[in-house]
Length: 154
Picture 1: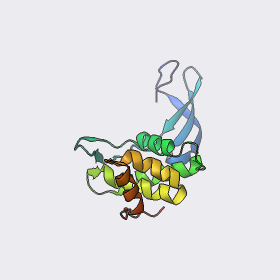
Picture 2 (picture 1 turned 120 degrees about the vertical axis):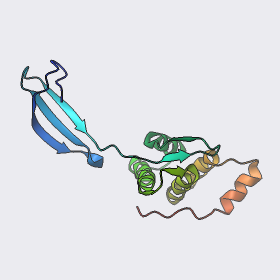
Picture 3 (picture 1 turned 60 degrees about the vertical axis):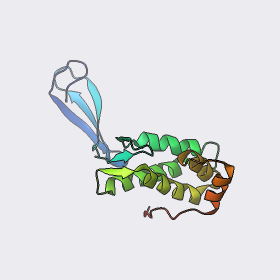
Picture 4 (picture 1 turned 135 degrees about the vertical axis):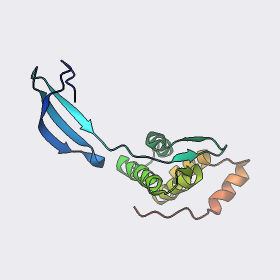
């Protein structure tokens, strides 16, 4: 680890703490200039590629999932901890998937399942963006008859 002040590579660890999601925070001191700095270590997960509706493939993005769930829960009685739990479930599902690619539909259905348990309005908001509907009748019909999404223990 290089010192941000003098770029020297010799430093000593003063303090180590485990953060949320397994990240490790270390407080360090440069042995040359004596300045102190903090580093954060985390595991880089190998998420599968997501196959979109139009066939494109893109990298799985935890931030994109979180943004979509937050938008669906905007001004609803859903806590940030509940949103984080849904995002964590989606990420865990993607990591446990044994193939290199996963259909976006599977992740979306998992999120819809979790939102349905928490808040009907958030569920409807997410479903209206996630799925493509030709008209209002098709939207109402899909709300009445919902396919069973993949089950995941939380």
